[in-house]
Amino acid sequence: MSASRNIVILGSTGSIGVSTLDVIARHRAGFKVIALSAHRRIEVLFGQCAEFEPQYAVVGDARSAEQLAARLHAAGSSTEVLCGEQALERIAALPQADTVMAAIVGIAGLRATLAAVQAGKRVLLANKEALVSAGPVFMSAVRSGGVTLIPVDSEHNAVFQVLPAGYSGDTTAAGVRRILLTASGGPFRDMPLERLAYVTPEQACAHPNWVMGRKISVDSATMMNKGLEIIEAHWLFNAAEERIKVVVHPESVIHSLVEYVDGSVLAQLGNPDMRTPIAFALGFPQRIEAGVDFLDLAALGKLSFSEPDHVRFPCLRLAREALRAGDNAPAVLNAANEAAVSAFLASQLRFDQIPVLIEHALGEIAVAKMHNLEDVFSADRRARDCAEMWLKRNAVVAVRHPQRVAARQAARRSLP
Ligand code: NAD
Ligand code: MG
Image 1 (cartoon, rainbow, N blue to C red):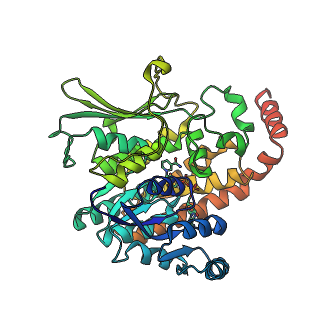
Image 2 (cartoon, protein in one colour; image 1 turned 90 degrees about the vertical axis):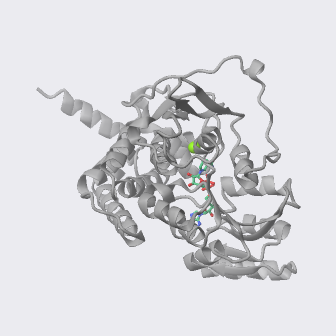
Image 3 (tube, rainbow, N blue to C red; image 1 turned 180 degrees about the horizontal axis):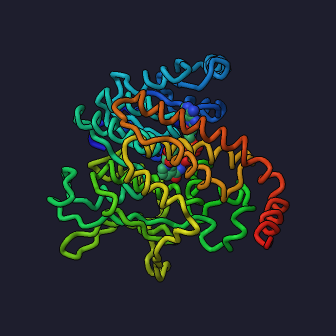
C-alpha cells in the first residue's frame, strides 16, 4: 500500500470482520485499526484488541463493556471500551478514521453505516440489509456526500470490478445490457421438495462453498440472499430490476458478470473466499495480496450454469416484487425475513414457512413513501410486529410436530 489507511471495523468478530483482520494482518504497514466492534463475542474481541491495539472497542451492553474493559486493563491495554448503538455511530464517524468496513449483520448495522456515509468516510459495504432496507435514503446520503462506496458482497464486488472505470450509474451510457448475478443454489438446490419442511438450522447453515454467519447462510439456503442482492445491485449500480438476472452456478467460481450491448460478457473469477473482495475493497484502487489460493482452471475442468427454480425458492419472486413495489416494501421484506430467519434458527418456524411469513407481511403492510430513516425503522417495526403475530398463530405447532401436521394436511386433502 502506498499510504496508510485508518480503518474502523463494524462487526469485527463476524465472518467478514475476521476475514478483514486476516487481510489487514498481511499488510501491517498499510492499515491502522482505529476501532472494532462486537455484539456479544467478547472473548474474540479481546483477542483482536490485544493483537491490533485499536483506540476504541464497542460492545452491545454495559455488562459486556465492564468485562472487556477489566480484561483489557489487566492486560495493560489502552483501548477504551464503549457500548451501545450511539457508540457504534460515534466510531463510524471518528475524525481520525478514513475507511469504515460495514460488517454488522442485519438492519442493526444501518445507523452506524449511515453515520460513516454522512461523515464522508470511504465505506466498504458488506452489510447488505442496510442498503436493502434504506435504499433511497442511503443512496441520497452517498450522493450528497460524494462518498466512495465499495461493495464487499462478492457478486457486487465482481460487478464493480468489471464495470467501466469511473462508471457513473448510467447503464445505457456505459453500454450495459444486463447484470448477471451468480448464485450457488445453496445446500438444498437438489433436495426433494417435500423434505424442505424438515431441514434443521444446522443443515441450512452448512453452505457447500462459503463459510459465513448463520443469518446469511439461511438466506443462501432460501435464496433470499440472492433476492436481497438483486435489490442491492439495483441501488449500487442504478440498474432497473428487469436488467438484473440471476444465474445458478453451483461452483461459485464466477462471482458475477456484466453483459454489454455488443455481446461481450465480462466476468470476475476466483476461488470462493471473501478475502478476495475484502482485499480489493481495502486496497482500491491498488491490488493487494489476500492470502487466497489461486484458481486452477484445468483442475476445475468445467463450470455449470442453470436457471433458478422459482418453485423451490419463492423468496426470489418476493424480493423482485418488493423491489418493483418500491418505497418501503424492501424494508418490510428485509425485516420479515430477519424475523423469519431468527425464528427458524430458534426452531420456532419450519424452513418452508420462511417465505410464507414474508409474503404475509408484504401483503399486510401497505406500501408507503420513505423519506427518511424514521420511515425505514417504522416499516421495519411494523413488519416485525406483523411477523410476531403470525408466528404466535401459526408456527410453533408445525415445528414441534411436523409429521403430525403433514399427516393432518394429507388427510384434509383426501377428504371428498
Ligand atoms: P456474522 O453473523 O458472522 O457477524 C456479524 C457481526 O455483527 C458480528 O461481529 C456481530 O457481533 C455483529 N452484530 C450482530 N448483531 C449485532 C447487533 N444487534 N448490533 C451490533 N453488532 C451486531 O455475519 P457475517 O456473515 O460476517 O455477515 C456480515 C454482513 O456481511 C451481513 O450483512 C452479510 O449479509 C454480509 N455478507 C457476508 C458474507 C460472508 O461471507 N459472511 C458475504 C457477503 C455479504
Ligand atoms: Mg453475495
